[in-house]
Image 1: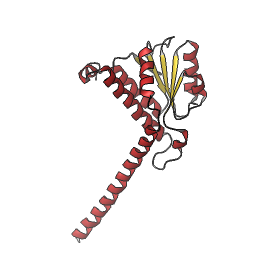
Image 2: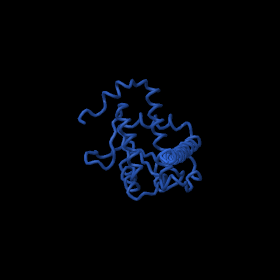
Image 3: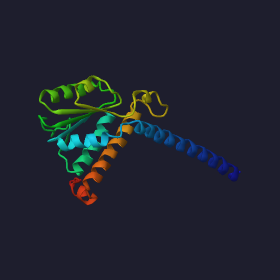
Length: 198
């Protein structure tokens, strides 16, 4: 009786593992296909824009903002002067600064307002998006399209903006890896710039 019960539990556990691995594979395969379809010159182009900027401002909404926060943190570790838009200590943007907007649609009202304000003072604007054309894209100096629009159809198990958000997270982590390798930044130097009031 106990043996039979244990066997049933093991079968359930095996089925759960199979489903779990299937979902991992689904996510990894989808992100891989998006990144493979993304222009492989973006790392050089975005690094040049970062290097030429006096200061860098990063903006997004919802989960895209969280992706921007990850990128901002690593840029600070890389030695860049970075602010996240919307924080109480974020300074005013000026000419010569770079505003990076992360928006899958390029149509988020609040981000459109940020873009207009930055453009008015002469800041450079980069949009990272799932679309090649959008309201923000039309105002931006450069648009970095992650994958192709047709790759963002409904994916069961990756609801709403998940595909764009995760693909952009991986894309921006690869940008950081590019910067580290190009500039030869030792991890010890990056670690020394990490927050120590934690």
